[in-house]
Structure formats: C-alpha cells, structure tokens
Length: 218
Length: 172
Image (cartoon, rainbow over all chains, first blue to last red; front, side, top):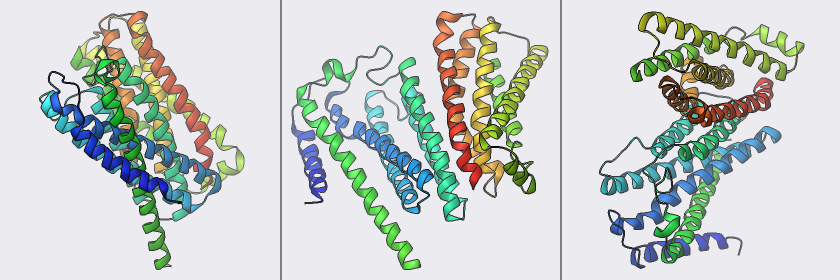
C-alpha cells in the first residue's frame, strides 16, 4: 500500500469529473453553468504553485548537498508546473471569454500569471545554456530560489492592492462569501487535492524517465 | 503625463539593464581569482550592490533632469517621486546584479541577463509606474504610502536574497 495516494488521486479526479458536472450549483447571473469551471481552473493554479514550491525546496536542498538527484527533482517539478500553468491559462481564457467577453484582459492576476510563465521559461532557458552538470545544478538553483521568493511576494501582495476582475479582490464579492455554497465546497476541496496529487504523480514519473535515460547513457 | 511616465520608465529600464550588465563582465578570468583570495563573497556582493545602486540612482536623477529640460516636468509631488526613484533603482540594481552574476557563468552573457531579469523586474516596474502616476498627480503619503512600503519591502527581500545566495554562485 505504498502507492495509496495514487489511488486516492484517481478516485478524487473521477469524483471531480462526475460531481463537478452533475451536482447542483448556485445559479449566478453571467456565470450560470460556467461556474463549474471553478473545479478545473483554480486547482490548476494551486497545483502549479505547489509544484514550484517543491521545486524551490529541492533547489535549496541542492545548494546544501550538491546532489544531482535534487536538481533533477527541481527541474521536473518546474516542467510539470509549467504545463499546469498553461492549462490554467487556457481554462481561464475560455472562462473569461464567456463571462467577461474577452480571451485576455489586463487584469492584475492575468499579468501575474504571464510573468510567472516568463520567469520559469527563463529558468528553462538558463538550464539550456549551461553544459556542466554540477554548475548547471547550482546556478539554476540560485535563480530558482531568487525568482520564486520574489514571485510569491509579488503575487501575494500586488493583487490585494489593485482592482481585479477576479472575485475576492478590489471590492469584488469573493466566492467565499456566498457564491461558494456547501455543495460547491464538497467538490472543490477534493478537486484541489486530486489535481495536486496528479501533478506530483506526473512529476515523479518524469523523474524516473530522466533517471533511466541517464543510466542507459552511462 | 501618462506618456511622460511611460517613456521615463522605459528609458530608465533599458539604461539600468545596460549599466548593470557590465558589473561582472570586467572581471572574468584572473581578476576573479584575485578577488576570491582577497575577501569574502558577502562583502563583494554588498560592494557591488552599493555601487550599482548609487549608479542607477544617479542615472535615474540624470534621466529626470534631462526629461525636465527636454519635455518639461509634470511631476507635482517631487518628494514622493524621488522616493519611488530611490527604491526603484535600488531594487533594479539588486535584481540585475545577482542576475548578471548568474549570466556571467554562461556563454551568452548579455542576452541571458535580459531574459532572466525582465520577468523578475516587471512587477516592481508596474508598482513603480503606478506610484509615479500618483505622485505625478500630486498625491501625498496617504495614497502613495502603501506603494512606497511595498517597494521598500521588495528591496529588503531582494538584498537579503542576494546576500544569502551569492556565495553559492561565487563558489562555482
């Protein structure tokens, strides 16, 4: 039963898909049935931040131990995190088209997500331009820690200071007040956990692939 | 005034990027080993931060002077605008110093500095632009205070991170 959490991830995601599309949701003007996107759009961002956090922790470990294994974990968490970021942007973009009327707006959170993507693509480019394994591990770890801490400071503070189209910012009524009723919480929290577990699972598979590739090369 | 501020920060952003890019270019090779044997990495990064910070502040002030001569000065509250410039140039110098240190370890130094530094600098740039808009309209502490405080906080974080992380960069 070492892999109980994988079974849990599958069960939670099946529950999210079935419950997310069938369980009663509150009827909101403009949102209507698109409110169900909450179970897919928001967990994508949570998963992305979670994976980037794990990546930064592994970067710190790498700086103190100098082990290549920690570096491998750091890059694979970032790779999967970027995919979840792209999925979050896509689901958000579709949602925005049907509620706000545009695929992309100059909202502070959208800018924040674009900046996040740019930072981590820059991280991947930085790794691509370094040849030596040890050197690449250490230097990219420094950038990873620097970028992640600043990113958290920014996306933790900036959206709270400016008006946003998203709920819960700048005087907008948040989902937490009355929109997110108990029915929705019943699906939303399991969905978040399920997507996070799936993201972690994909990362571990990618780490195994990378480890095997290295073993066959040497 | 919107155009003035937009132009001002674009000029400042590119000027500071170009100025800070030089900070590790000069000492590749043997000079590097000389410094390495002479003093601790912490004192090197602090020295570089102080130098680059004052250099960028100087550039920002010259920029302001030139804009005043050529385009006029629409800024109503100069004190607040000066504080924005101070924290903005300090923050830029912190990010650019560490990032150019990172980029100096690779082959394509200057391109990589821009790629690595711009996304990190963007949120601070947005905050600085917003605060300069408010100071340009003549608002005082009550309205700009939170932005100034945010920029000061970011500066503290950047300097602390650069201080902690630079020794690892130095060792390689």
